[in-house]
Each structure stands twice: as C-alpha cells, then as structure tokens.
Image (tube, rainbow, N blue to C red):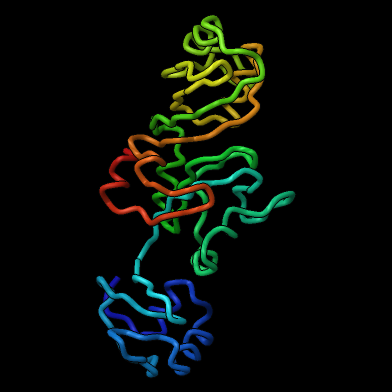
Length: 236
C-alpha cells in the first residue's frame, strides 16, 4: 500500500464507511503500538502495520488471500438463495472488502475454497486456460469397481461437452470411496462424470488445489486462514 491517513487505512481493511471509521478512531477503538490514536488524519506506513481494533489485533493487508474449509450446506454466492453464504463464515470486514469465492463448490460439497478481494487473482485462478489439478474425495452410491476407474480415466461424454472428459488420476480409497484428480473444473464435473459412468455421487470433498492441501493448512471444517506467498505459489 503506502503511507495513508488512519481513517483510509481502517476503511481499506473493511471496517466500514469513512464516516464510521473516523468515529471509531475518535472513540479510541483503534490502538497502534499499545496506544489509542484518536486523530484520523494521522498518517502511517501500512507495510507490516498491525492495528488493534475493538481489542483484536489486525494486520493491515493490501489484498487478502484466504483458504476456507467449506462445510456442507453453504452456498458460494454473495446472494445465496437456499442456504447461508460462505461469507457468513468470515469476519464481517471481508464482506466490506468485497472478498469473493474463487470459483464455486456446490452447497453440499465440502473442502478447500479459495477467497480473495484481488480481482486479477480471482480471474487468473478461475480461468479455464489454467490446468491446475484439484483433488476430490467422492463417496459413491454403487461400489467402486475397476471398470468404473478405467472409464473415468479413459474419459466419459457429458451432455454439453464437445469431447469426453477424463480424470488425471483415479484411485480407490474404499468400497464406496474414490480419490479423483481433475484439471478442467467444469460445472458439477465429478458428479456428472460419475453419473455418466452409471454411478452416483453421494458426497464430495475437495482436499487440495495444486500443491496446496487442507491437511497442510490444518484448518478444520468451517475454519479459514490467510495464505502467504509460499502457499500461493503452490497453486501454480
């Protein structure tokens, strides 16, 4: 960022309108280096700046990059229709900052969901030209067979796709469990591929995107974390 007045800093972090942020500062709710700062015109260097707002520490970030361990029955939409939106799982500041999901998971699908307020990052990560592998754990209605695995690896034809879609990898993890690796990211792809192969997906979980795994992040269902540059590099 750069050197900015305190009210602009607080607003940039999603704490509300400029007017509200100024009142927040004047009320002594913003603390820097252990001391309240009540003059909203005071400028600070934002690099590495840590604020305390309402008694909670907040590191100033120009852009935020987040991994959420999405639970079931949450919609990846800013205007959800039938279930709560995933933004309700994050601090309110992220809504003010216009944080958005990177792509979507179905409401009943769990697992890793990336979120950010960086438009170019969202666009780049969502682009169909990117062939980043995503790992899914699927629970099937019918037992997993070698014939099913062979069919998914060879490619199945979906109704609105010009060519068959194939899994990069497909490994049986249990009688009704498959680990499927895809790179296309088509709409409802795992579910539709299983249906095209005469099976049915009962549950679906995304465990990794590129080299970034939920296991390595160590976040439980419903939890989230900021991603640093080393972790973002694993998405390439």
